[in-house]
Length: 153
Image (cartoon, rainbow, N blue to C red):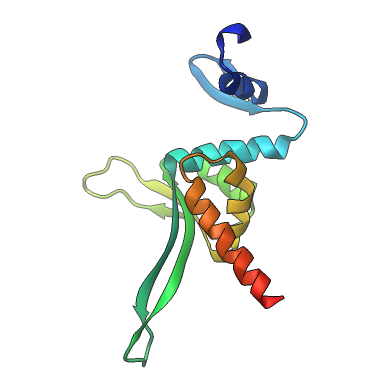
């Protein structure tokens, strides 16, 4: 690779990732701190394909006349490539994988990895430094639990 023609961001990516050929999507993560490279890759997946939910919504409780507000804190990725979803699950070590059968307007089944609440907090902390698009929502999840934990001490 010719590094002189690349800006510093591209140069950084080239230092962390090795692409076996321009037409091959095989990515080999390498470097001194392998875990942060995986986290950077996961952050890229979430920025492009993921969904981060941090909202409050009302729900009726069984036997109660009035709805109460509860937090929806969730991270998920949907895609048709099962090995990528399994990689996410293995890398984070939490969450669930579900098969979503194709709908009439879709061509393929989808696989979904999802984690919620404290698991989402741990995942958000790992990928937050590398995230770009979802950084604000990840930060909201982190702050939510840091504030909650500081109150209980």
